[in-house]
Image (tube, rainbow, N blue to C red; front, side):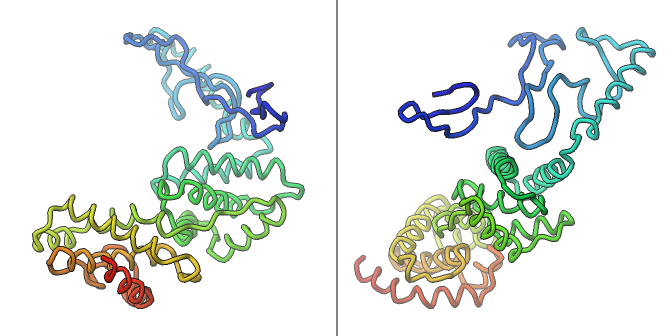
Amino acid sequence: MVNQGYIVCAECGLVISREYVLPTYQMGEERHSDKPDATVYVSLGNRMHIVDGLGSYIGFHKEKYFQDAQGQTLSARSQKRFKRLKVVYSTRVRIGRNEAKYRALRTLNHVSKLLMLSEQVRDRTAYLYKKIVTEASTKITNNILLIAVCLLMAVREYKDGAPITLDEIASTFEKCGHRVNVRAIVREALKLKSLTGIAPQIRRPEDYVPRVLSMLMNSDKVVRKIRARGWDLRTYENALRNKMLEILGTIPASRRGGRNPFIFTVSAAYASDRLIADEHGRRSVLTQKLTSNATKVAEYSIRDHFGMMKKEIVVLTEHT
């Protein structure tokens, strides 16, 4: 149940989390109207992914030419006045003492676009970041590193909905000009776990199956070879997906050890191709080099992971 802006357990009264409303509200909404006043928005408060204030906005973010509610151009005097008001209501005034938080969230927006993450993952990252900053007993000294850890936690929560690796997160932050690497993210995650009890979930190889399939099926060389082997693209993709999940389900986590889950999934795709080729009496499509070029995983890594899979694959073949 909801009580005074908080989501509360109806049985024990425990506060679970805050209730967040939609960030904007459309005023004067008319579904079948072409009038300008049907597209006036106001902010209800702080949005998850940015630092902004309460109240309405004067035009668009970088707009310097203003119109009234009926779409009529304002006079020169009014243009000057509203331009001055818009400058006064600038980012510097709105963020106040939240400059570190503002820069962290701005970096998050940039990184999310580069990684092509959904708004849900971005907003979840911002929520975790604000929650940790608010509840932390000690002062946060590196907001950029903290937002990177929160992004890792968010993509792990969404599993195959955001199959982004730790290396990709670190390299993208570095591209944005920040000194963030894999070791620093892991160190901060461990530190965060000791302070708050919150830590990123361990990624499972199954979470990367949709991404690996997408990378293979979007490779022109792979597609040409699939057709050359007499496969229908959709039939081959479905067969490869089912066999990958079967192989990954056969090999328990205890046998995988500390192997990289993404590389493990790529190797499972290579092994699955060989299995479905034998089942359908056709030549295999994927080679280690072709798989490496399509997924950007080194050939020796695929070869190493495939070597430990052979015994399990033999058992799986005998049962089928």
